[in-house]
Amino acid sequence: MADSGSARERATGQGRLYRTFVSVETSLVFLGVFALFFFLAAIFPQSSEPDRHERYREAGGKFVALVESFDLLNLFHTWYFALVLYLFILHMLLCSLHRLNVLRKRPLFRPFTREELLRRDYSFSILRPAAGSAIDIEKTLKGLGYRRPRYYSEDARVKRLVCERGIRFRWMSLIYHACILITIGGLCVTHLLAFEGRESIAVGERKMVVLDAHTTEWQKLARLLGISQKAESEKIGIELERFITKHVQKPSLQYPNEPSRRLLAAWGLGDEAIRYKMAGDTIHLHDWFSTLNIYENGNLVRRQKIEVNDPLRYAGITFYQIGHRYEMDLEVGDETFRGIVAETPFTIPQMEGEFRLRTPKLGTLYKYDGTVQVLAPSAKLEHRPPIGRGERIWTTVARMVAGEPTEVMHAHMTIADIRGSSVLGYRRGPGGPLLWISTTVLVVMMALRLYLSWYQIRCHADDSTGRTLVTISIRMVGLFASPEREKQRLCDALQK
Image (cartoon, rainbow, N blue to C red; front, side):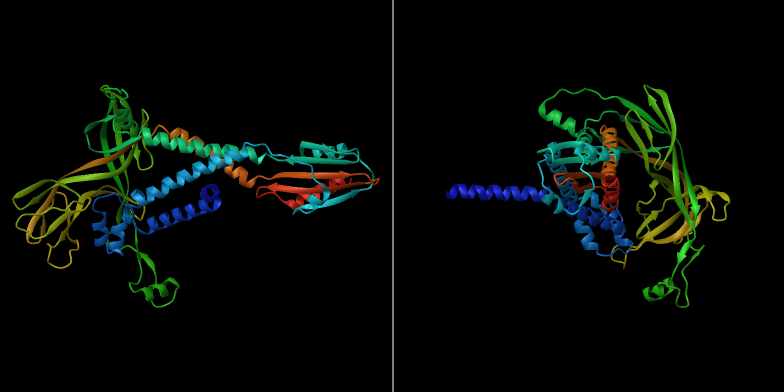
């Protein structure tokens, strides 16, 4: 007996845990956790670059130790975000299966009494002046758009009707829960078969990209199970024909440095005002474009100009613009340093500290006054003192124009041969179309289920006294549903 009691307790505990995990409250907890993740991502600048923590520290970021410990600058690639995400997917899977199991069962209607209807929230009674059959009432309800799913009759005097109006919410719920399962399936297909990569391509350079990488999760699983695979993957060539940049001139926002004076200025108080001013570095990179050529078996099959958010799609692979990379030569006196990469620290013999060339500015400039100008290629040179010489902060020591000698720290320096490269990302996700279709249907069905009105009425008609006493209770679903308006429509129709 004790063993059976313990077994029942364990079963009850497991059932309670399952019900808690598939409950709406748990969904709200997950949404709150994701909201916290996105809030943190909005506060801390996200980056996957290896030196992100160093850059954050140099920029004067707060809570550096906390940021580094939890990797808050690459939040969506951390182990704890992945754990929450996988738990949420499991939660949605179990919720959908649980709800589908409930929705697939047809609703059971049992006989009801007038007293039971009056105990419901939206119920009322109408006394018709003359006796009338339930068929007459059914015709009246049909004229209002109701259809009858069930009819009861105990005797000739008492009739019961269950009628509905509107799109059945059960079907919409079935569809969007099924779409959740399809979406999860699409995510699994994408996880198994998708692959991605990145390439830095210089102008005039051609690189090969495989159409079916051997690094997908499915390929790894197939090798583990001993399933035969294609010996060689098909490849296409991608060539960068042209790379151009577009800059814009923007004013900078000027405001007091002290927080108290800044607050007063924000409210229009004090002797200082917040305003825009053309001061400092007003030229900013706005967009960059790459003209790509696609080759298959050595033949040109596609030429397309791409930019950020306007990718190229070919053979199931999407090529998108994710960045740029510049190299240049630096002449220091009689010595030439070739292939210096912009934004990468380097050292110069006989000179202390580190140097860094910022991303050069070249291409077209759209000025604030509406005019257009071609920029002379130039780049800022920054210097950072060596370790042990105070705070290691990058400071600008020169603005160098290509081909023009510049004196920097008692040395003549010149930048030359600026070479731009386009950084392309590519990705193949076979589950993409399935995800697009399922998520679109999911959102549409959820919106219809949430907003469209659906009514179900239970009608009890009793004409045993010579007059018909009609009692109706209203059940409704949807934000647009109005029980008061529906009650008035029913009253007006049944009293005629």
